Length: 192
Image (cartoon, rainbow, N blue to C red; front, side, top):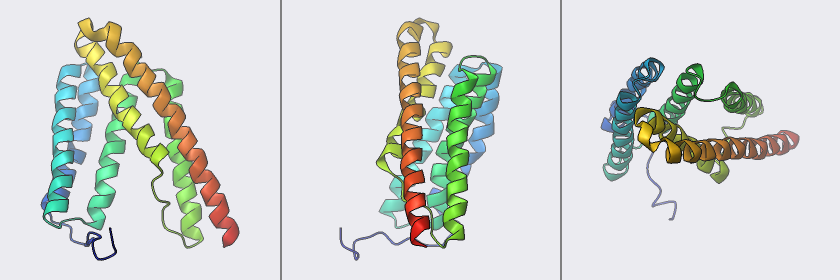
């Protein structure tokens, strides 16, 4: 891909992909309430709808040149909020251990602090590292798999160990990626 082939990123707000992202964000509290109430099947349905809108907003943004700065912020924010809502809901219900929630939130707080350090030194956010993407992928699949075990108890013998394996691996990779971001922040800070 050459510089001429790179997609144009606009500052528009009202685009179809951004509207879909706003819809996804609006679904997060609904998702959390359903999890807290133990309506895992309905929560999973909301998650499926969210995933479809996530896919569609990406396809539409690329196909119709509607990639926006706002969309680049909203899309990952919605993903993170769905993960956070699932973590909180499942932890409050006693399905996930508190230490897992604390470990994942602590890493995000660390990244927020690193972002402030970088901004104060005139740098933008660090590019997403592939470890961070894999970690998010693991968590994004772990939590629905665990929810499937509770929505459909016959699946529990397979879904619970599989979901927890993804969750533990995701948490480990989340912190590994965090260490990479920390190292890069220290390196950039020394240059400034």
